[in-house]
Image (cartoon, rainbow, N blue to C red):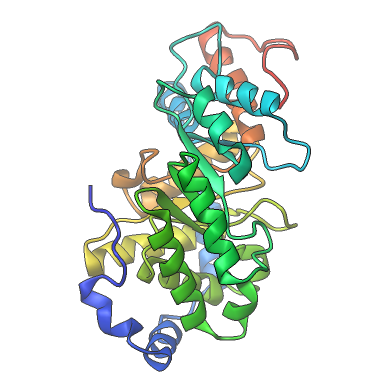
Length: 318
């Protein structure tokens, strides 16, 4: 697998200065909003039949980052979440494990113990999530705490204020610093697309994150009104496809927030397949940040297996 490196050689001169970075980002093709939304809507109408649907549901389960990011999180809640991630359906051990559990840095050690011996990764939000309003040294300390506790993945938020003010080099340098502090942990860079206002900004943020060494680009924190949509995810999938074509570096995509049903998840998988291609149909390169989605996937999975829906007690309520 090709892993991201900071400023890939093919585009190394782009990040030489603020002016060259700005020139590159503003030289990206403008987004046809009507065309983008129409294509996303069209792909969402694709019909998935029974056998393919069963495959898609299992694939979607394996792509979920099961998440709890609340002030009331307790060690017991995180342990229960870890157990669910490892065995989403305790009555059917053929059900795949989820990709990861995602928690705050102070819960990483608890989560790590809960998923020990399994394929489930532990992700930690960091960099003053979700607002990102803190000094860089504070953000880096947040990252180092999570990594030292055993985090396999770091989910950082960009400084949206700096980005919207056009201070792209500040955002770039912050991402590269977080990447370095993350060490061997994979880095997901969250844009909070609902606050970026335009599709052009989402495209620019996508390229900026990838130039800075993101292993994943992620739509949102799930903490604002507008989170993942088919259109903004399609735009980011186009960006990772084009980035790999230019640099040879593959970067993952994670839509987060607002994806609640199996039908929604399958629509996103169609977007992945038709836009970036089959190379991204793997939880190493595509994730869902949508914990409530898992319960619907489990109920739909049992419906396919038995021909009937379970009662309300079939799945746990997180």
